[in-house]
Length: 271
Image (tube, rainbow, N blue to C red; front, side, top):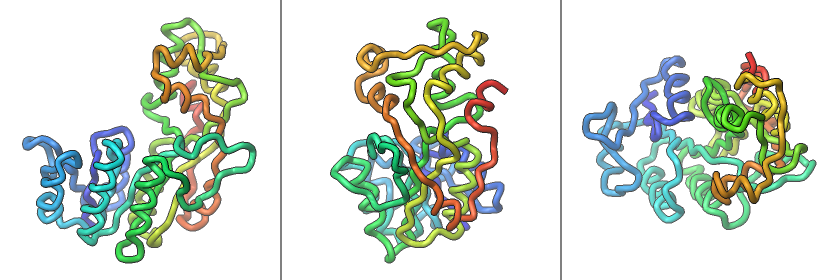
């Protein structure tokens, strides 16, 4: 299949591009630069979308770009959906909020957050097109992502730091396992599917301790109060890092025959 990837140079998008190519499909990046690979287009410039799609002629569109604002994101989904190709949208989990102890499963979006509204727009395009939403957990691997940022904190502060409570749980996924899930979704997900890219659940305090070891420390971790972290990280980011979340990927694993098997987050940081 011809797979147009929006955000192909990003952390998730580049892993998806590698996995899609390894599975034998043709990868077509959407590039914002005239000298870039693939086809020229920019979600922030709506007039460029339709010409890019006509040139690329994709069978599947993977949207793995960062949000650019609710109105612009919704307008982009309208244009992408209207082309008629399958659409795989990369969402997130922080919009869900704290889940409590009952795992949040692959249910339909709810509420009026920007992410929920965009998810709803993607899913509303089914069954006219094969539209799919993937919600990745916190992504790690290849010394990138939030866990890698925590290694930098440990080196800078002399101790591992986690935001909020030591009991905060994070749903996480190795970036290569996530790439495998995207390939499965591209090849066989049903219209309107919601998929959870979650390989395991870890304590953020354990991640901080592993980050300290990765930075050369003894594996110590200390709480970083949300208010103090917000001064450096911004209020929204700090609040999201403090979210206690438990997500289920049971239906995703069964329906997609997806079996995440890369090293767990703590082992990945310290290995």
